[in-house]
Image (cartoon, rainbow, N blue to C red; front, side, top):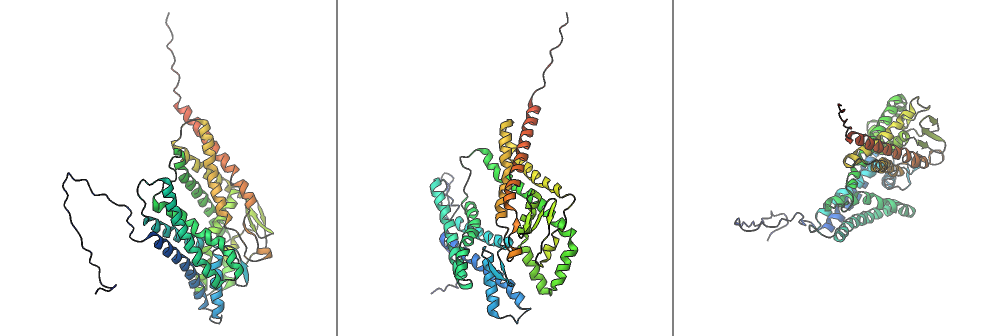
Length: 418
């Protein structure tokens, strides 16, 4: 009798086909694992791994402060995991409602891989009707989101309060949805632009290029302000006096908030600025200082406006122009087409940055530390109208230039000799 540990010997059958026989049909998707099992198992594992990662970070810190009761350490792990999902959590004596987007994006990425793997196991025939493909996509995404909500809800009940469970529901839905939706599309090989105009196929890459330019400009602004105020950053780090383990943990926590800082820098280079509590503000040409927590990276916040702050506004215009350039590469020379498609391509990266910025702000405490992040009412203006105008001007200028190049020069008639 075989046991589960015995090697499996699978008989292999060989057949010889003549050249006149049709080639056997190849199945691109053979369900080696039931797709539902793959979706539920892998997504549940992602939720648990997120809790384990937070636990590892807190436990390493606890090794340097063993006088802290284990129950308090367990509570800190739970509160930290809830903060990843947008729930206000009690950490270090403060109520933190600022999601570390770096860690949360890793969870969403894990859900995306889980959905991609599950979708690849879905037995969807080639050439299936659109309704059947939509059902397959919704099934995979629904299974991934449901598994994450179930496991996350159990964890929230165990580590949080009843009020925190209700606050965790939006995050428990959005985190897996953000990863599973595109992951299932890629795993099923769906064509989202089937039947749409050709220019829409170039739009995602145009948006990606524009967002990439905006991200590079924001990163440059962030690095420059860190370098310019490196002495204050070092002083804050020295004042905390962490040991070796504490320094590593402190660095990892700040790295987890790097996407938040990038979104804030993007709001600055676009012209909207960043609020640092009810009284603090940093925008091009404007700085209103306020009291900030002793976090080393916040030492880079300038105390006076820079002489060339408004030069950063070029970053947004360059992002719009780059996006319009990519979208209009295959279009005709009509000026009206260049005008409206350029405007669409220009404003699209700004809208994507607004969505990104919506999740980057929050609270690091109460009163003076509440409401930190991009100035969203102002960002709605600065990230749309200037970028749409820049994209439209690029498209119009391109169309006029190409039409002028394609217009043949008039041929002069030879003068008659009488």
